[in-house]
Image 1 (spheres, rainbow, N blue to C red):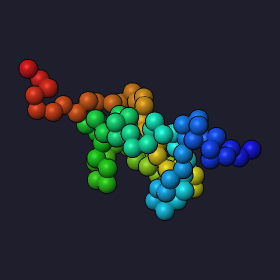
Image 2: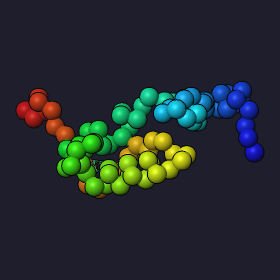
Image 3: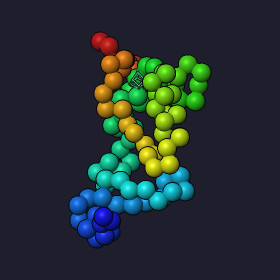
Image 4: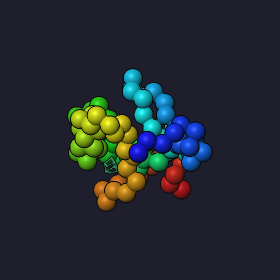
Length: 90
Ligand code: SF4
């Protein structure tokens, strides 16, 4: 069953164009991928480079092979290693 845009909006969802495709998203999550994905704070994350994390590569391959799912922020990972910035250690 399809939901009307008005009803979706009332429930906090909306549609927008992402990479030339009309997608659905939660309004609360729109633009929050980097803030919510562990990878962007992880030492192992090197997108587009040969030394990128194999788990991140696997997820990227899955997403690029999917016709429907465009983003999947990593919320839990047993191999996460926090990327320290200058000033984090005292
Ligand atoms: S180890 Fe986990 S958190 Fe770190 S880049 Fe890989 S998938 Fe992301």
